[in-house]
Image (cartoon, rainbow, N blue to C red; front, side, top):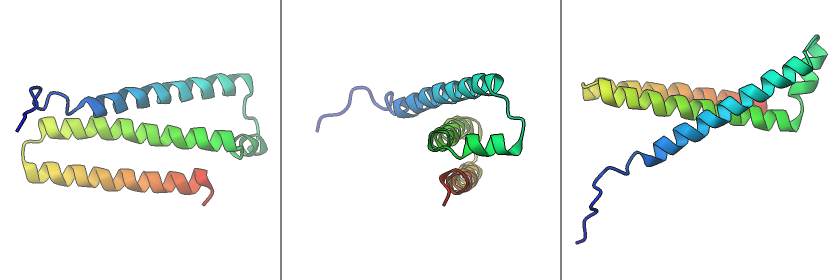
Length: 115
């Protein structure tokens, strides 16, 4: 059998990449919305409806929510794994986080996806 000489050193690379990519997307979305809303302020409910009813906005907002949840999941899971030493409590916290974030994901698909 050939063993991997790196051991587990590359195990967190996917999470590291997900953290960075999600951070960049969240930043770009916030920057885009800040500039857009500064140049075209929302002054009425119909303005907000016209902005939020467009397909492009709904897709980018949904990607924003998913990116935000991926970013938060990766960070909080790492905190729990690093600082909660009781494995039962750590498991409970990670599962509670998964349920809450799963609920947020379903809710955002319903609201922004128009299900």
